[in-house]
Image (cartoon, rainbow, N blue to C red):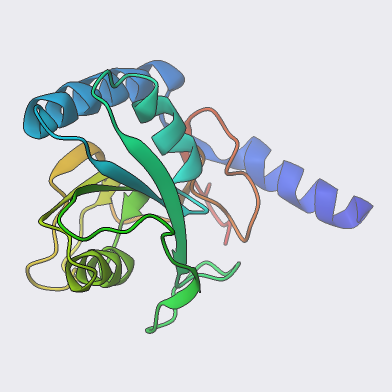
Amino acid sequence: MEAEHNRIKALRDNAVMLYSPDDIHAALDRMAAEIEASLAGTVPVVLVILTGGIIPAGHILTRLSLPLEIDYLHATRYRGSTSGDAEVEWACESRIPLEGRTVLVIDDILDEGNTLQTVTDYCRRSGASRVCTAVLIEKHHDRRIPGVAADVVGIGVEDRYVFGFGMDYKGYLRNLNGIYALGPGQQ
């Protein structure tokens, strides 16, 4: 375990900070204001996509004053690796009935869009009357599934492997207070 600790520490020490905590908090303030305006007059069910959505959702939710219910679901493609499998794996679905409800889905990152599309399709099949999505990070590239977009986006990033503030590197470093990319020669 000491070797793993040293490897992850070296990776963290050589990572490149793309966005500071101040940058992220400004984006979260803006996201919360957009969500408040968009969902005014509703009592939404907020679904947090585990595991990456925990940290951004916690920060967004404390900035919202509208009445809401919170639940989670666990859908993932990465399973501890740095690239996603084609199929989304479901570990847990929402326990709150979505029939006739406005649903806000919060996740850490919109990359190719497989997870977000799968989750929004699930919400619609479950009878949600409206599905809104919010992601802290949107990765810019041409591999996105056509038509998949988030309604509220915090920050855009170039096409690099990023981690921190909910996003992980092989299961580690989600807890970093910033958005980082791998440094030169790292993988």
